[in-house]
Length: 290
Image (cartoon, rainbow, N blue to C red; front, side):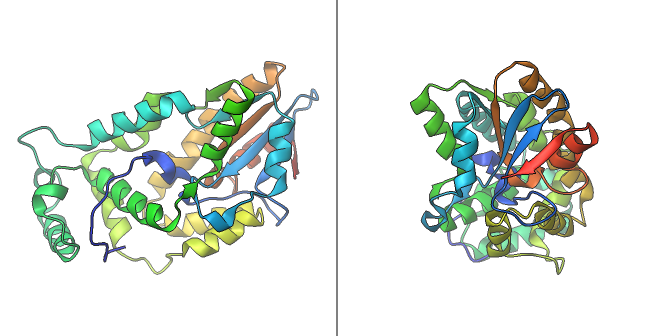
């Protein structure tokens, strides 16, 4: 990542929450589940990887089965709002004229970044106009865009839904989606940047994550994410746990509607004790992995 020649900011910025993937206790066929409430109403859940390789297609058959069985589909943010969310992040990620990154981080952090970007042939005038969290998004999106040029699971099903004229909704508003990062304080934003750059000995390759996603091993993926974020667990909760808790009432609402929903979210949202599956089980839902 540090050897990139060009510093590219994301177009599809909130892919983050699922570049890291995740879902259930034992390996099965895919990151797809059928959820049945005690009253018999059902929905389907699908774990998304937001950017895939050509070789990752076709998707496991369970995704298409869940899609075919559904009359509605929900994403983290619906397709119409996604562009607005990206624009909001770009606007919030840039300092106002006359302000600079130098004024918001420790002098040692800034010196480290200046040297690092110098090695990447990025001029100081380029990176210094952006907030730390936006720099993190830019680096991660630039890296994954080079490695995974194919549409991710969510984009794939957005196109499929359009072909079927299937109603599409979002689990979050544009403001809620953007606030995951834009709502960070200067200190939190700097910590996120430093924990991104400084190895903690637990860094995992995307191949490990992709293999776990492909075989539907949610809890293994959740453990990987926990290890990756052990130096900044509060952000892990902000990115995953808090959103999962906020989404449970939304999923209940989908079930109350009488329609069958296919809820597609970053695969990292499903596994572990704070994941969607555990939260739904705690409410008495039956979970069947497809």
